[in-house]
Length: 413
Image (tube, rainbow, N blue to C red; front, side):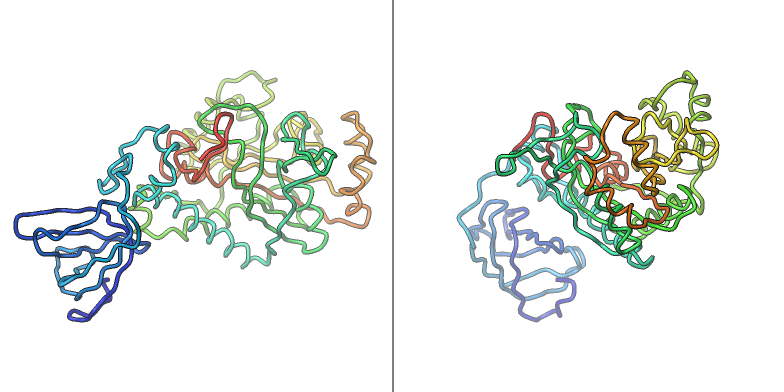
């Protein structure tokens, strides 16, 4: 609308966002993908209910007080559907005043609220930055199967499906495939769903989420992976326009030139946890986030060297001390956002690692064939998209920024 020349005839299509009937005039605010437009009608003109889809034809008229500085006058309103039912929440109000159950139960309608919709637009802008950054670094986007024949990391956390009479599983991760494709393209990435069957019922876990996966070859160690992650995060932030940040109430981080790193053992000591603690608890992550902000002025901190006992079998051990791994978690504002690290790449190392967990390497024959035919030192990482957006907007629950969340209790809408 803002680009329409005053005096020209315009046709707009969208939803009735709000009706305001005054004594001398009726205002209709129309909403479409580009924003809001004001339509001026004579008093008493029948106006359909909010959320009805309409076509409006009229004259573009300059008005500094109208959205975009232009409104539509001498308008004719044509209904494109039956009058809409009243939505569960008034979508024309500046903020979406709805409880989480209401938001989730009525997601197909409540995502129409401009501020709520802007939250997912943060995700799409981040994806553009993710892809463009990696494309610029010579990566190839790939697409891997989401139904697999074996569990990626542990059989206790997969969804089993009937695959023509034999068991198969929803993929926990594209891990095996993205490693194999390093042997083809050297640098690969993927955006896709992953599925975790852990019966978590927390504000940070979903049974299905979007994973932004990256894998690259010919690295020295996990620090090379972390350097690429830093570039990716900077590209994701740069792709978010200030106007979108304002509309979504996002607080964009400054990605430092070098992300602060602390070893897992030192992190335990810093937060006062026992030295034999196998993992970081949520309160430890929050404390480390506060430390990184106070000590380094950074919203990000990488914790490297997690115990090998807590990492998947394909993880590369720390040279000189095999208790620790060449892996890391990246915390963003006190919450784990990314897991990454260096992988094993020698077939003999894989055979030892698989036998050490009491399994037969022949079970992984399809996976291991790539390594037997020559694989470079490599590593990668995965970013949880919904967690990323939740931290940007300060959402208390990751479901607030997930279009149609799937968890322990929810399969609809």
